[in-house]
Amino acid sequence: MSAPPQRPSRPPSPAADTSTPIGRAAAGFYLAFEAVDDSDRLREAANWVGSQQAPESDSRQKYLALATAITKVEQIRRHAGRTLRDIAATASNTAARLTDDTGLSPDINDAIKAAVRHESVAVCERAVRMINHQTRLVLDLDEVTAAMTVDDWLTSHRLAD
Image (tube, rainbow, N blue to C red):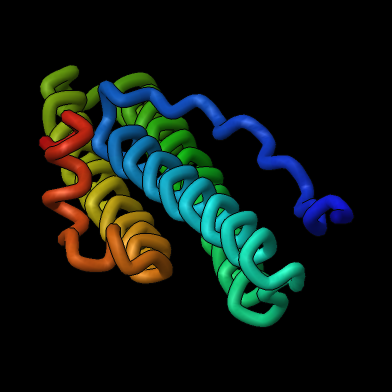
């Protein structure tokens, strides 16, 4: 009996700061990714033992879908992080310019902070929705996890807000 075909080993999931909404969504995504990947690897091994053939197309499609999802989640995380840093930098520069150059009251800082909070929340909410969409796509790849909602998945892993 020859050895089953080997898929590349899965690299460790990136760390996610679960103190933030984006971090919790990303952590939930990576847990879903690992669960579906583990299930697929087990199913692939069991199928190979039973038939002495690798179930090529289903497993390959799932592997490609997982790779695509992980790439998109990392793009979302990077873009959201950059956007949040840009918002903070612009607000800081604006506050300094307004208070130094125009002699406006330092109370302008409160208005700027409120605007930063509003914009930051909008960026985070959009990023979380986009990551949760990828989580849904990953959960749908396995018959066991497909029945769960993303909210149930996150709650079951103590990652819900």
